[in-house]
Length: 328
Length: 155
Image 1 (cartoon, chains in turn yellow, purple):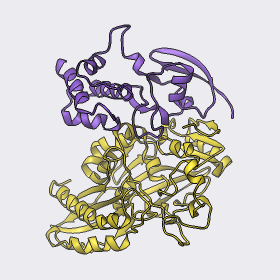
Image 2: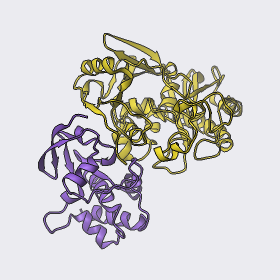
Image 3: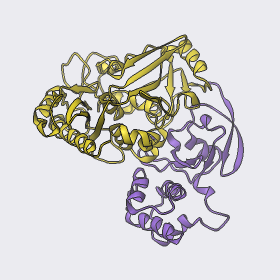
């Protein structure tokens, strides 16, 4: 498959990249690892005038630890995240999620920024130009129909990033920079919830860093994912759980499910003040089930994926409790 | 679309190229440098047949822009053998019948080579995980795994 024509920019500093982003705005596609963007380009799902490779900007690569936070540069590879001792120790779900993305070769190329900002997916959208020519234009392609849910007035494409649920479970934040300014928002606010345009980034902004607050107390977390082919598939259902213990009681608990709609979704846990033994996993799983959208637009039937949300939510919580026992 | 002048270092040889930015590394290796050991199958990063090493790291050349490879050291399957002498990993794939049609072999052998550079004594599980992104549709994986194990044991 050939790539469409584009001009190429390779800024060597963040300042240079932000200037280019301001200049070209939506006409520029930011690429780092390329594992997502190049596929979209080949399929002609995007046809930007300029492709800007930010991978050679070292200032936004690497994992830094401060007294209160962990700061991850957007260019940090998923391989680095999966192997990072500090993340494996204190942010197990993030390391697990990174380790479960595609194959080791892809994980070495792909970056956390690119993984977070991957487009929502749908069997009626992620197809070649030839297949799409034979289909009516759906909401995501600028049309007025949904091919997955006939008659729907909105887009049902699914966000299938692995890292976002895990990073959201830690109440992670995203740093968005533009020329002459920057803002830090919660990862939740990075998502619009709308499958047509899944992110809230302004056209002149670039995601540069992810900030994770360090847990206050003994913590445990886990990420679980359903897929058919271990080394290939995006999550068909996923769940991340994070818990902090203080005086034998759960002081903080957060569960986030992925592949359940156009954005990861937070599940109400009501675990605060309880011991792990008192946790009503079925109640949390029911919550997760009611939040998830099971539509027949991925490689497994929607009804099945929705049922599996229950199973994987429980597995993630159990995994977090196990990790907690390990004192991580 | 503006052409870019780049120096591409492949198998320790430098090539001065004047290329369009929308060409993948896989296209340039095959079409411009005639290094046809690098294969294209799925073209979207799933199958691993286009795998080459970039600074020693297995990389999908079908999802890599050639223009971004300035200053990188690229190794293709042609770069492993010394003249007529095959590299021990290649030799082992022949010896253990790890090759039938051979389409996945360049990618799988380079991935195995990189694994052994990083971890000279991998377990079977580590080997299987390392080559999990290299899809074979005829030989199967048992023979390839045995071949890689045999190289590790001989060290």
